[in-house]
Length: 153
Image (tube, rainbow, N blue to C red; front, side, top):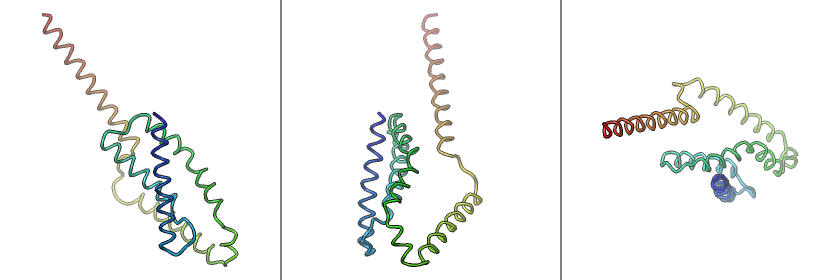
């Protein structure tokens, strides 16, 4: 059911926000620090665990994909609630740090994408596994047909 995927996302979001609040307290900041990012990491880890354990049903997949397609607008809305104006008024260091972080992330992604062998994407893995399941099902049907024809002869 799609609602199961939405529930998985809700659990990850609640845990991420809670852990982000705890991180903010630990750092002495009166704000949620990285709650959305932590939630997304939990969602990715939960999805991988469910796939590996064979519990990732079609309904879960649809629920996660539904909210995955809405992720960017949600993050933009959540970021809009932060007190950006007060941070910018505090000085240019905020702008320099923000710009530096974005540039560093872009460079890191470019570097990582060029290093090492290119592995399969999750979509490619799922497509390959679906073909393998289909081939196995067809082989089982052929074996059953041979068994029935041998039994009838």
